[in-house]
Structures are given as structure tokens and as C-alpha cells.
Image (cartoon, rainbow, N blue to C red; front, side):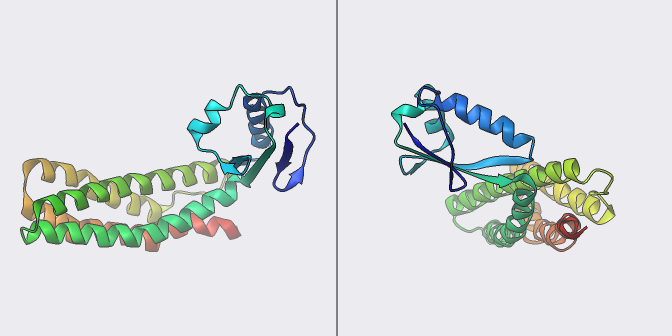
Length: 205
């Protein structure tokens, strides 16, 4: 039978229970406490989603050690906001680097790779912010999580991002360089300085 621990505490388990059923049941229980699973280790190895799925039909009795770590959704949301703020600095540097390459007719392959890295990073940033806002809006009912500073920062950032692809598609290097060197970094900075703090202040509300 597996040595089963949740957040370091041993819990009883039935050896014939399927691993997938155990995880699904735990996920439902955690949802009632606004918690989620942040990490699963089986026999010392951290599982990704694919590995978790592949073990779903194995019984707990076939495993030696199962360790699950959970985290409060609210803590996760505030951690995501802190990460987003730090991530913005990297994206601003990446944006200016890409803009400089287009402006000065730098190496085409380097410019393209830098641009694609930036687009991927912007998508990651968007996912962080959206997931954090969803959790906070669900938890702080009656508390305004979308005041004017946040709305303006969001609108400006979305506008800058939406201008990128048309300029890229047209091959307009002048416009692309201007967006990458000026407009997008400015919008990112506004989000870091004025948008994200609106949500972070909820931690002390």
C-alpha cells in the first residue's frame, strides 16, 4: 500500500483505490475550501499532466509513495500577480530588443525569434492576469476589482498588442519598431505600476 501524504501529513488510503479516482475525489474536496493541487509526486518523481493521466488506472497499492501538495487559490492568485509584475520587466526588454532589430535592419532570423518569444511571453502574461482576476472576483464579491486604473491599463495593453500583428503582417518595420520600442513597453509599465497594484491591494482589504 502506498505511503500517502497530503501537505506532508500521512493520510489513510485503500490499496485497491485507483490513483485517478483518488485525485478526482481530492480535487472535489479541495474545491470546497478554495484550494487546488499544485504538485503530485509518485515514488519521488514530480508528475506532469500527461504522466498523471497515464497513472490514472493504476491502484494506489501499486505505488510505494504518493505525495500531494495543495495551495490556496487566493495565495496562488497573489503569487501570479507578483510573478506577472516581474515578468513585465523581461517582456519590456524583449520588446525593445525586437524593436531595435527591426528599426536598424538587424539580423532577420534573430528579429523573428525575438518577436515570437515576445508574443509567447505576452500570452503567458495574459493567462497569469486573467486567472488571477477570476479567482479574486470570485472571492471578493462586492469588492470592485476593475477600477479605472486597471481598466485603462488593460485597454492600453490590449490595444498595443492588437496593433502588433497587423504591422507585422504588412511588413511595416517603421510602425512595428515604434510599437515595440515605445507603445508596448509603455503599456506594460502602466500595467505594472497602476493596473496590477489595484488587484494586489485586495490582499489587505
